[in-house]
Image (cartoon, rainbow, N blue to C red; front, top):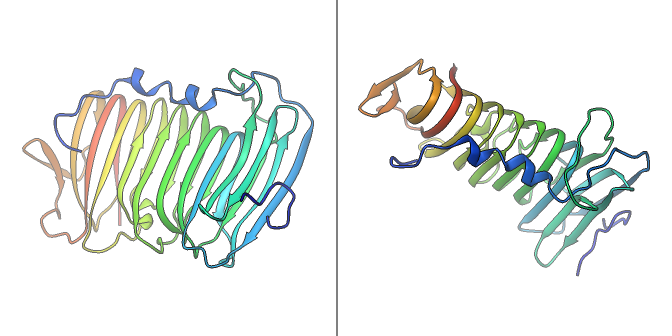
Length: 303
């Protein structure tokens, strides 16, 4: 049974190949495919929905938002989800459903027609505001095309995160520690400006970044679970990456690069890899594997 329709009240190891820019550039195109190539219309409509928490042991949230302004944040513990959506009714259909048997939530818009969306700032007024319960274990899958996204994941109960972004400006924050253990946190981005803040608070066993053209700030500071060793895999091309690393955590970096400037400040080379000075004594550690082409990698240490 599907409920919650719009308007209802129930509502890295060595030996890997060097990444090629051509392998990651199509991401933005793929994410925007299937939507009409049109000028924005003025027929905007709104819908909203919510559902009270009823002892759910998990929530699988699939967010599909092609273009516009997106905001995700923690909500009230007693509310499983709440959304407010403004959409262009001429070119998009709203998506809003929840299946209590599979615990799957779908929210966003579905484009009509074929081709690519042409995003022009200040013309697309679509907006989605989504609040999710911090008390329910959450597997989040977000596909976002063009526009701006502000995603706050702090104080949620994240079990897994997968984010795909196209031509957008995206900020992902984890301001407060995750309430449960997180397996994976994956970001696959196209022509994007991506800023992350305190990903260490997510306490994920593995963080993965795959990127094409753009500027990325990968902030690995935060409250990592003590005594753990986490894996960070980075594969980027045609852009710049700033790595923000916590001084209190031991870091090992395996870097494969082609025409890339690598600022290795604070990292000492031992054999083929680079290590922080506290690697041997640190209780909490990060193993970072970097594959990069045509860009810059800068390292910033944070107390």
